[in-house]
Length: 88
Image (cartoon, rainbow, N blue to C red; front, side, top):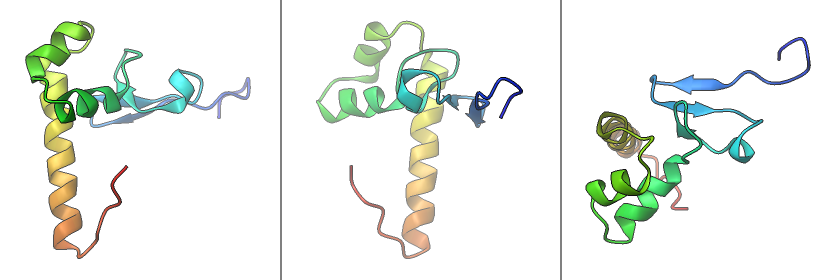
């Protein structure tokens, strides 16, 4: 918490930030207001990564790929640990 009572944003792997004061605290691509969930919604809807990047120009291809790699890595870790991650 800062001196003015606000929470500090959390930064994950240099590509995701979570700021309770912005976008209702949803995880977003760093330095944007674009929620990470938008990327997965686009892909689940049958759109390409290029479609997503065209729709959200503040997000770079490198950022989007890094988020997908993090999701894959964490999924594999969960499977190997015998966890069954809930589906949103």
